[in-house]
Image 1 (cartoon, helix red, strand yellow):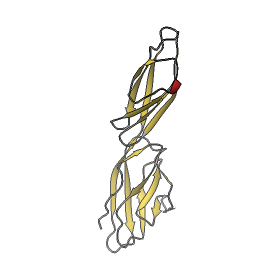
Image 2 (spheres, rainbow, N blue to C red):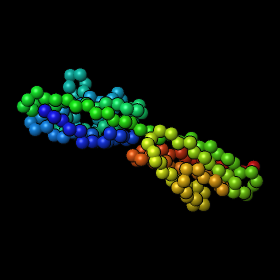
Image 3 (cartoon, rainbow, N blue to C red):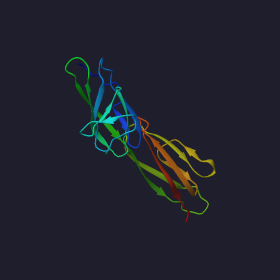
Amino acid sequence: VTIGVTAMIYACQNSTNTFSVLAVPGADTYTWTLPTGAVVTSTHTTDSTGKPVTTSPQISINWSAVDTGVHQVCVRTAGECGPGGEVCTDITILKTFITPTVTNILCNGGKTGAINLSVTGGMLPYTYAWTGPSGYTASIEDISGLAAGTYNVTVTDHYGCTATQSGIVVTQS
C-alpha cells in the first residue's frame, strides 16, 4: 500500500492547518503520529497509546505549542486489504521575530526619527506593513524621517506567517 502526502510542508506556529494524505482504498482508519505539543482540532478518537485516529485521510492540527524547527508527521492506515502502510514527512514550523531599534528625534518638532528592524525566523522574503500617527503607512523594512508618535509593524514571511510589533514609540528631546 502506498500512502501519498498531499499537504503543506511548512506551517506557522500559532496557526491551525489541515494535513492530508491521499486516500487509501479500503482503509478504515488513519492513525497519526504528531510532534510534541501539536493539538488536533478536527474530529478524531485516540488509540491505546494516545495517538489521534481519524476515519478520513486528513487531520487539522494547531501548532501553537510546537517548537519551531523541523518535525515529523506520520500516518498509518488500517483496515485495507494488504499489509497496510505508514508514511512520514517532515514539516517545518516557522515563527517570525521582530526586534525594533528606535532613533529618537533630535529637536522638538523635527522629523528625524527612525526605526530599524531586525527580523529573524520565518522564511524569506518578508513583506512589511507599517502604520503610525496622522495616517502614516510604509511597506519597507526600516523607516526614517519620522515624527514623534507610536508606530506599529506587521511582518509577513513567504508562507504567510506574521509577527506584529505594536507600540514602538519615537520621542523627541
